[in-house]
Image (cartoon, rainbow, N blue to C red; front, side, top):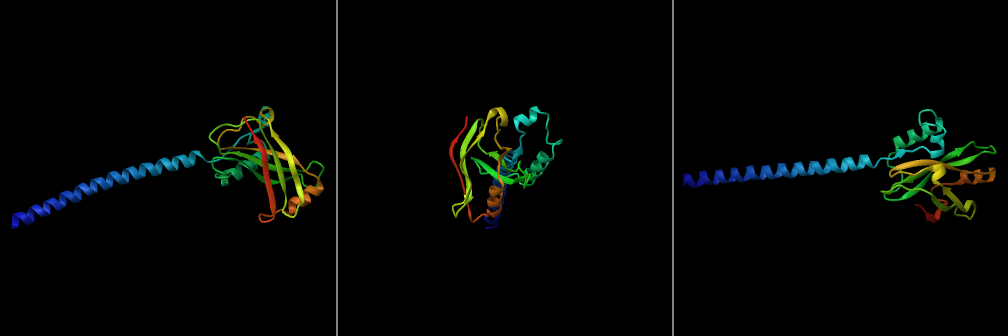
Length: 186
């Protein structure tokens, strides 16, 4: 009887030891998967890219206030944009109230491939039927914009009038209409 009890105790200890080793192996595999996912998330963080024309003119993120501010915004919000898609984010009005006023955007490439010569028709307005732009053609040419790399954002702007600026000031999340039609890129 003592031998059977002894053998059962040894068997339970052996099984517990094997299960512990399997648990450790499984836990190690889970940690590797977690680290891989964490690395992928880090790799997918958004980076600011200079416009080709600005870069050729000697502009850098460090010597330009606008790029510094955009880089700060991206650093604070590295997950901007839609996964596996191209999108644009409205940033702010530049030179408000002047003849040179424009609406600043970030073009965000979250695809797995570089993009160039991007064009689309852009509509922005109120759901009441008042539009800042209705089907305005936007061209982000390789010559000016460059090639937008995956997980990178580049700024661009569209000029606005005082009337358009007044409409932009009325835009809120629940009353706006935003569309991108006829989207093309190389």
